[in-house]
Amino acid sequence: MDDSATSRVKSNGVEDDDDGLTGDEETKLLGDGETRYCQGGLKPVLNAQTTLTYEESLLVIDVGRFHVLLLLLCGWAVSSDAIEVLSVSFLLPSATCDLHLSSQDKGWLNAIVFVGMMFGGLFWGSLADHSGRRAVLMWSLAMNGIGGLLSSISQVFWLFLLMRFISGVGVGGSMPVIFTYFTEFQAKTRRGSMISVLATFWMGGNILAAGLAWLVIPHSGLGYFSTNFTFNSWRIFIALCTIPSLSSAILFLFMPESPKFLLQAGKEEKALDVLKRVHCINKSDNPFDISRLLLSSDHKTGKSVILEESVEVSQPEGCCHFSGMLNSSVELFRPPLRFVTCILLIVNFAIAFGYYGLFMWFPEIFNRIDKNGGTLCEPGSGSTNTNTSSNSTHIDCTQPGNIVYLEGFLTAVSNLPGNLLTIVLMDRIGRRILLSSSMVISGLTVFLLWFVHERWQNVLMSCVFGAVSTVGFNTLDVLQTELFPTNVRSTAFGIQTGIARIAAILGNIIFGVLVDVHCAVPMILVAALMSFGGLMSVQLPNTKGIDIH
Image (cartoon, rainbow, N blue to C red; front, side, top):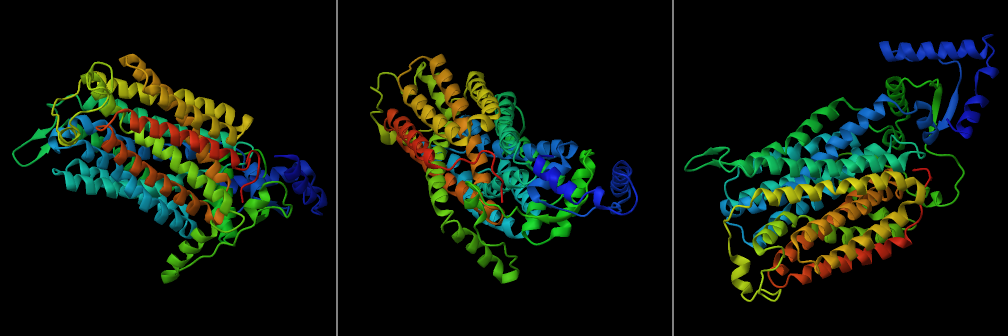
């Protein structure tokens, strides 16, 4: 507990009681009372009345087993979203013949999950700000898994596309709410590093998807085959990828609602009850003698004033629910949040267009490199395809070799150093510097990718791009949860991820069109946007060490 929290406790502490007990004796009683609460569900015997801010209460409950469980569950859910988003990119080379895919079809197939995420992000994010985090997480994760499972048995392209869209709607809900939910259990002293740790689970999902693809898809004889129905290796891969999301949805049944959301909604007793449960599970040495909770202290200093001046949360019901969601969205574009919202929209667009416009195509790029002798473009074409109309619709049924999936796996593993770097540096040098530098370096890496012509050089540069851009994404996750108050946090995250999905859609579709026109054009476009977004992010406020409100 920090000095301010300690002084507040002592000001209402045992020295002022007239029950005749010493401080040590009363502490023992408080501890016994907390034990009775944990084991029997009874309220503890409290002899002190303490009013703390929510941030101070997080210091009282300390860090323990609950936070480990919270990290593992939220991390598993983040991994499930990563698997769902990235799984399609691994099946493209093998599904080309089954679904009769042209380059444009592949672009749409990569993009459709982001179309779903765009709609899902705004809807589920706003719903979470008015109905709670936990229920939204369960339903969105379930939709993600069910949509993915149904897509694995879809036999025609349009139905497969529709199921991937439904799955994307689920991903769009779970992604913003997971980070919001997780953040609201973290004290400011460890918030940046803990969110960075959570973000590393995206890499875990990426590696898991790449590993599954490497192990399952090349076995083309695996599965069930009949005249009217085929369930081959790449469909088995898609079905296996739904396990994390479906299991996460079930596990969230056993988790509490966010106490920060409950407090913001005026449900102070329920918020205290959740904190008591967390305190019990953590087995904290600090006695839980909190009788009242405040959202924050009355002192507004530094950048935190930006975060505190916002409308109070309302609890719309019935037909007013949509109006509440709309009000939360409008609030983001009013002072003092408007400037931050607009800058983050630009940064999100740039990084999502650049990253997903390239990363989702890596397995297909590696497949082309494998066929073209180490270069993305066809040799002897002068880097320009002479018959673009035929190339854009040509369907190549040649099955990729194991080396393609191995290279995809290596690119996924390359995220590890970026995640470790984020965890170490997030609370040391600050969010803004990490975000801007990673995006500029990523843009430079993509630009240099055009100048290499050896297979190993392409793989190396792709790995560097994956590692450095991961730092930017992780930093952006932290900023988006710190720069907005509780009553609009999930809505803000949903809108930001929504614009990122639009960028990812455009990135994949444009890449699918331009890759058959001139290989350099999509690379230069990605490099320019990533660098531009990095320069814009310099204008964001510094959130290191501030309270969230």
